[in-house]
Amino acid sequence: MTIQKLRPTFTFTEDRLRQLQQVVPEAFADGKINWEALREALGEHLEDETQEHFGLTWPGKREARRLAALPPQGTLVPAPGEGVDEETTHNLFIEGENLEVLKLLQKSYAGRVKMIYIDPPYNTGNDFIYEDDYSEPLEAYLKRTGQMDEAGRRLTTNTRASGRFHSKWLSMIYPRLLLARQLLREDGVIFVSIDDNEVHHLRQVMNEVFGEENFVETFIWRSRLGKGATSKVTAKLHEYIVVYGKSKEQLDFLGDIRITATDKKERIRQWGQGDRREDRPTMYYPVFSEEFGWIYPKKPDRTDGRWRISKSEFEKLQQKGLVVFEKQPDGRVEAYRIIPAGTQTETAQDSILDTEKVKTTAFGSKEISTILEQNVFDYPKPTTLLCFLLELLNDKSALILDFFAGSCTTAHAVLAQNREDGGRRQFIMVQLPEPTPPDSEARKAGYATIAEIGKERIRRVIRKMKEEQNGQLPLPAAEDGQPSPLDLGFKVLKLTRSHFKPWAPLPPTDAHTLDSLFEQHASPLVQGWTPDGLLSEILLLEGFPLDSRVISLEGFGENALRRVHHAEVGHKLFVCLNEQIRPETVERLKAGEILGREDIFICLDSALTDEAKVVLDDRLRLKVI
Ligand SMILES: C[S@@+](CC[C@H](N)C(=O)[O-])C[C@H]1O[C@@H](n2cnc3c(N)ncnc32)[C@H](O)[C@@H]1O
Picture 1 (cartoon, rainbow, N blue to C red):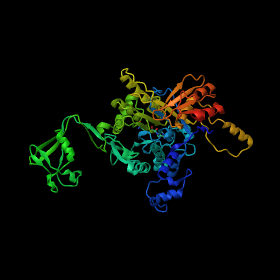
Picture 2 (cartoon, rainbow, N blue to C red):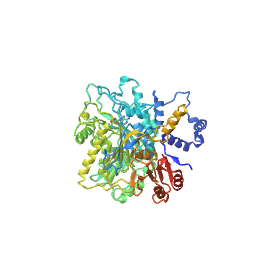
Picture 3 (tube, helix red, strand yellow):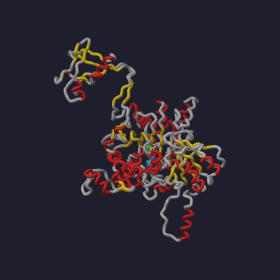
Picture 4 (spheres, helix red, strand yellow):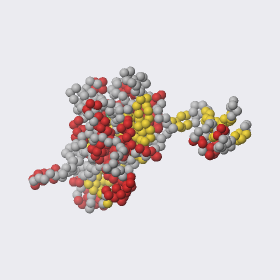
């Protein structure tokens, strides 16, 4: 009997190794990499280490990469009461340090996120840059959140004078991008807001992480309307949004969509010289007009012009009566296609964003002041900008992640856009409980941290939308876990220590100490663990998304049995965390009345007799803690 033990595992490194193994299987033997074989497989493409080579490097890069590959030490526990409609919603707000959170999400969310939007600190010289602690990332987080110096200054502000200014920023962003990429679907996309302080480094680092071939665009966003400070040589009025696809080929982007208000005419004859798309031989063909007879641009005499559309397309339009010919004053006959009013047209999205549509930072501030009644957050993005990005994706049920959530503009935009177009998009916000400065408006208004601002904003947006629904209640979530038509809810989870005791190698010691160490490790769980907290850790370890439905099953006496399922996971989990599992419960599980062969039953190791374990292991997939 080999009953599986449920223990914390980390899939980031494992997943990448698995991917490598798929491409270069010959470099793997017995689960290990054969470096020589890999080297041979790569052959001439391998960079000669003795030569200079191209790429971005900075002091601390190796450590930053290593940091991404270190397993997480924490877990996420629900904070009931802080969200809205927590039992049925699919939207999440996670309070915590995003590197650790991104690691914890790997198993449940790898390849599931359609869009990531982040608005990280721009490294302006006044920014708080979270300096990762390599030895104890989680402990440092738990100790540090809430820390300010006496003057209320953030302890980790990255000033230009503090040295290694760019390196610190790069070491912060690099491991987070590495982990974020793993969460994206193959047709997923990442948008990163940034300005001139780091845009050049960001592009290079993203070329490395996402591949230069997956670079899509650097949008230019006019973030301010007025003039900048006059003392400067130039007035800075714009920022950037850098866009990469996980795989650009698979990206499904909608262009600039417009609906024509009136009939429009579009010229379909191209005049003049020059190499244009229309210059292909297939663009020269005769066309008959009742009024003007045969019109045929003659090749190679280009003075007659050429058609802009293919012959078959021309004929289709003509059959529908959507082509007109008009004689010009100079004698030329011009051909037009008619675009009837109400037609949806699409052109490639401009790289410079339309300010009318996406608005500016000032609009974002106005939105915050309206919703929260005070200006409690500096430089929020406008929801209009985020709605524009959401609309670019040809996917109304996308899962959207923002792990520098701030005041949660992204969550607000997801809710607003869903209401606008009937979408079922879901959001995951991640935000550090970064303390607000002591004398700030935010602190005076009672917001101790930025996370509190974000949560309150979402609550208020939801409240307002519910009021506006005029008492029309949204339909409850269906049993299959699909979101209800308009999901006006969110659930809060917080980063904290794992419920599993940290693994540490045993030091050389005497028999007595060893005995007590074994005793301590008899249960792998820390003292004071709670079933609800442990359940969400089990979801993360078993690869179940955090919006999985959890249902308490009746009829098992004092045994609390819960069934977990999610529409995107093929099997269910059955979890019982009682100290003892009653023989009657074992009997019912054995009878197979509630769970299938693929389903997993999880309980404490000590809760089952050896005999019961054998019986159950035979009937279902059993994992013990
Ligand atoms: C520029 S703001 C984002 C603003 C947001 N787009 C909005 O419209 O409100 C960046 C946010 O990232 C948060 N942050 C910085 N480092 C973080 C980390 N390591 N983990 C989680 N959040 C972090 C900061 O507290 C800050 O609120």
